[in-house]
Image (cartoon, rainbow, N blue to C red; front, side, top):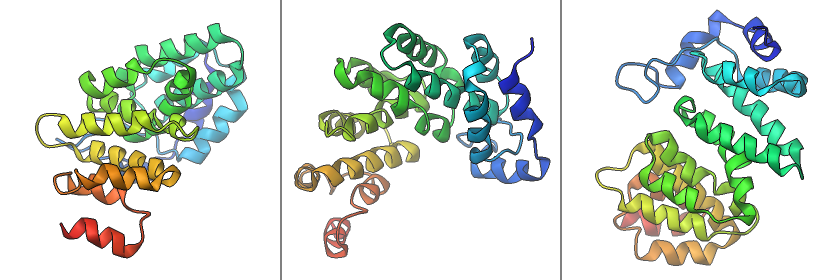
Amino acid sequence: MSCRLHDEIVSHRDESQVAGLSRFFKTGPGQYGEGDRFLGIKVPVVRAVVKDVWKQTSFDDLELCIKSEYHELRLAALLTLVQAFKHAKKDLALQQRCVDFYLQHTAYINNWDLVDLSCYEIIGTWLLDKERDLLYELATSGKTLWEVRIGMVSTMALVRKGQLDDTFAIAEIYLGRPGPMHDLLQKAGGWLLREAGKRDEKRLMDWLESRYRTMPRTMLRYAIEKFPEETRKHYLSK
């Protein structure tokens, strides 16, 4: 089956970049991206291809690419899905199809960039005027690290609309998860708290007051990154 998205991405293969990308995305034994494979294509190149061909890309094409062993093809599928969702506008049936496709293929959304470049654009935006139970299910019971991260990062779309409640609530869920919090969840939680704090700094400071002494250090550092230096020292010294 011919697929232009697939063929265009593969045509930009660059073996000289493979080793560096493999190291960057932690593909070694025991690392979070273990076993992932790369074509050696940088994100701006993938975006350029998607911009050129997304209108001619079917859901069958997306199925082919999202299931690829190559990271860049999975990324291309997700960025194409983002475009399809955005341009569906008032076509709720098409938007729903995009959301369903995304949720049916989370097993292939298996690195932080794949999550962060797609989930809030699709899942978060879809939920702007809907119940958010899905986000809580992912954050609490996600089958993979990546599903748990999707639950938090999807709230970026809500934060950008001034809807902060879910970000704080899911951060609370993260803090209550059993065992040490994975570094990538710490970063996601802290990042989204920081973004919420840009909209309401007092609320973030109030939330931190009873939690910062026991929060994972990386999560705290990310959350307070935009505070004045003296304020950051106050939190970190305790």
